[in-house]
Length: 429
Ligand SMILES: NC(=O)C1=CN([C@@H]2O[C@H](COP(=O)(O)OP(=O)(O)OC[C@H]3O[C@@H](n4cnc5c(N)ncnc54)[C@H](O)[C@@H]3O)[C@@H](O)[C@H]2O)C=CC1
Ligand SMILES: O=C(O)CCC(=O)C(=O)O
Image (tube, rainbow, N blue to C red; front, side, top):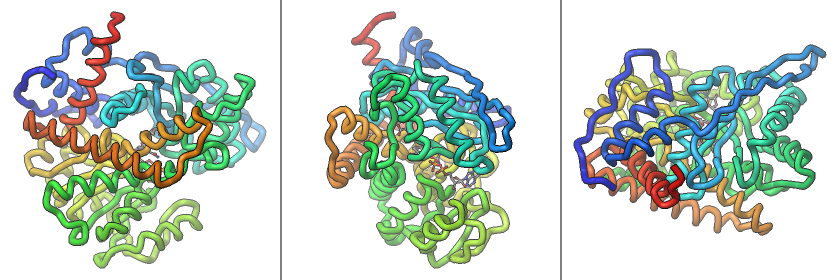
């Protein structure tokens, strides 16, 4: 690592929030601190490759609709690229590029032997039948058959996808290579090579890193209140596991709105409710529906866990945040424009590339188990994942202390330093 340099806030952005620009402004600050050479900077600033496909799908009404899909491979110097696939109507290429780069930094922060990639399809899975989603997933897999592979690029779930889609992807890919290929994708159903602990892994990592941060801040989990935005895979598991640690979850939300209960929400009850209401909280009566869902972000809680979409914390609402600690379950929930405000307020942020890395860590374990042909016990998965999360947290924390920089920039410094050192050893450009 280069000698210490002065920390500069990422430049505020004047246009609408764009996750790629947010990622790049933090990247620029971290590379300056590291004194990164121009060659490595130029290699890392752009993705290795980006693939755009158009997938024709016969819809249930007999008409053919063409969907646009992406896979961006940001970097593979540390190993095969790894990253989820998002199904959402708001997917766009800049977002996928940012998400792919974040995967490179995330895998480096937790020191697992992967590069970074991400995929996405512009679609609204909530309005599609299972058959339509299956045909779309198989079409996308066929279009990406030369990109994916256990030693090349290994997808996983992200927003709007889960074990069901990963099973179809694995099946379709296996047909193209003429052999069952479980290690081509992670987040699969348990019966077909999924790992114990993967479903809850991201939320668990959020809980583990929140506890580590609370310890540094002298916060007692049992005296801590929290708001969790997003009640999908990451948000619901983070809320459940934090509440099991004694944290009072006063607010949860999803696309249907935000729900507040001063006395704490019974998370098991809320999960049971959403499970029988098409995955949504509409009509949930264990808490009061707030007038404005965005008020969750500025509510009177100690801990804020944004676990839904990008760019929800911005220069416009950061001033009003009351929480002392933000633990980012989502990728990119804080726009770079909010960084100076949050830092000025002295709020500790456990950044996305650290806080939500429990998911990819257990995905790595799944891939290892598939290649070993040997299933690990849940205890083994959990103990190893928690250890990795805690070690990564301590490394990032120590870096933030050493350079007197926020945790987010420290995480980028740790990640970029590892990638840059690997380039030095491997050479090749
Ligand atoms: N699933 C995983 O293992 C990982 C996911 N992530 C990130 O976590 C975030 C959430 O992903 P998942 O939980 O997997 O997705 P999901 O599809 O399971 O759930 C998304 C949740 O967010 C809610 N939501 C969407 N827009 C919202 C808004 N504007 N306000 C409030 N709630 C909103 C949805 O209603 C749903 O409850 C994403 O940023 C994803 O990239 C990060 C690491 C791993
Ligand atoms: O589990 C994985 O491989 C990747 C999960 C993911 O997409 C993410 O961490 O953002």
